[in-house]
Structures are given as structure tokens and as C-alpha cells.
Length: 266
View (cartoon, rainbow, N blue to C red):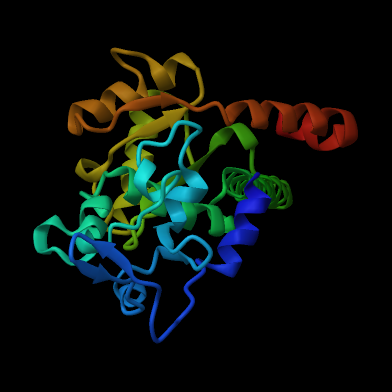
């Protein structure tokens, strides 16, 4: 059905230009269709066969039981009402912003905007998510390689990833830093994270969220890392980081494919 509608939309409403259209007698006067109406009402379509007009968009998108019978099923031929000030039939058909006519005009625009169709949007989001996952995986692998070459213990380091809203209003995620820690207590981790952010003039009170793995020193409600940050910034809500599952999967992969690296980091 949508393909048929697209074919009609590409052709556009039928608007034959004539010097003079057939007259229709109203009481003692003859009234005619006027070609200049096409310029003001682009949705208007005229049928030379029946000498009447109807709404192009409503004709295509009205339901099986249309609400605007005059401009769909019955069409329109009462030319006296076509130029009648506030009672103009065309203006009354358009109605308010949420009128059936304006809804049908929006349906028409959406149908022709293929890039915004739900299947296209989902595919675009899936491609973007794949790209982000590849970036995360690459950053993780490069971090592991760097730590291995520098003979640094894996569990003595902490990776910091920032999520932020850029100047255009888009949510971004960036790998920020790897920080060496002497222990993994919540107080030590908080100090190292605060120091790393402070070196770039990033203040704790501007945090609006934090995410870690499920260890008690990270998510503890009283003395965990998230609780310590919440004391300084009540807006920094904690979310359990499900990406930690990816880290566990990578460790299992290293254990099977690169046992010497896995044994070294333990």
C-alpha cells in the first residue's frame, strides 16, 4: 500500500491549468473553479471529468471511514464557499495544527522521508552501536598490551571512562586515563579518580552519574566508592556497569588463547 502511495505522491496532485473551467449555477449566479487556488492550497486536486476538487493528502491517508467526506469520498464542488472569508471551505478543511488534514500532510511527509523510517533508524542505531563496541574493545586490548609491555600489574590499575554531553547536545563516551593504585579501597580509588579529573579541571560537583562493577568496594551503599562520591555530589547517581561482563569475557579469552599473559596478570 505504501508503494502505491509513494507512486501517487511522486506524480503529485492533478492540477490542470485552464483559462476557464465549467460553470456551476448557484441560485442566480454561475461559479467556477479558479486555477489560482492551486498556488495557495498546494494539496488541492481538480477532476476535469466531474468538475470537482478534493484533498490529495487526505484522499491518500484517510481511514476506511474518513472523517472529511467532502474532500475525500464526496469531493467538493460548492465553489461559492471557496472564497468566503473566514468561512472559506478550504481554510476550514485545513483547520488547526492537529486537524485530520494536517495529520495526513504529516503522514505524507514521513512516508517520503525514507531515512526516518523505523527500519532505517534501527539499522543506523545498530551500526553506530557496533562501531562503539569495536572502539571499546580496541581500547581494552590496547590497554592490556600496554600494561603487558610495561610490566604493570593489571589489578593494580584503574581505567577511567568519561561520558559527557558535547556542545551540540549529543552524549559522548571517551576513554580518559589509566591510573595506578596502591590498593583498591574505596577511599584510595576516590582520591585517584578525583586527582585525575582535577588535572584537567573537571570538578566532582559537575558529575551526573557513575558506573562501576558489582564489587562491594565499588557499589557499597555506605562506604563504597559510589557512596563517597554521592556525599560530594548528590546528583552523581550510581548505575551498575554491565560492560564489566565484557571484561570478564576478555579475561576468559586471554586465559584460553594467551595463557602466558593471563598468568602474568595474576
